[in-house]
Length: 166
Image (cartoon, rainbow, N blue to C red; front, side, top):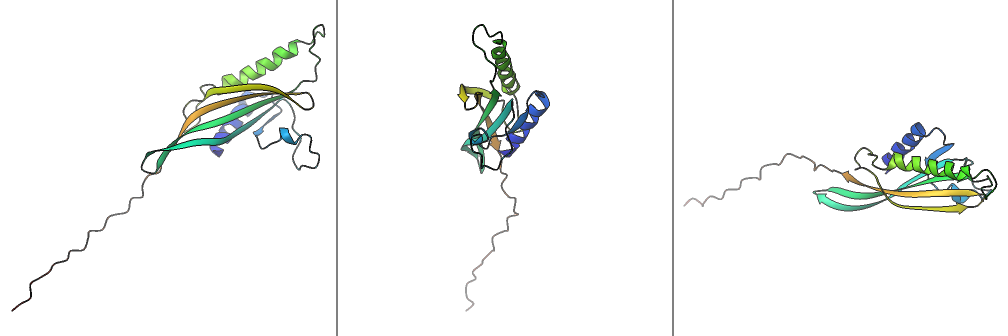
């Protein structure tokens, strides 16, 4: 589903210049504590996109229709102290506004041969180093049409049987 990834990376890169990193998700978040891993550093805020799951069914001939699942992680460092009386609780609203912007870009977004995306799940959790992750899952119907090869049919050979001459 590489065309989905490319389209979404371009969408976020063009529509959300406030993001420091926009990339496909290949485990960068899980690698932040592994010093010996060969990967570039993850900078924040970041959006990581995973479109690795499609449930397929046959529709006609060799063509198929599938439900594509796309997971988007908005990752924000939360180094601001947001306790009551800190005068920085507005940082919570800033994070919520970024999450809402991600959702507004994706909800109803159409990618090439995919129907409009629709959010099916969301979850929010904290990660090491004061990182907050806003993960949202979207689905859309994708179709892959395979046209049968058109090979000219050859006429069956005609066989005639004649009675022997007497």
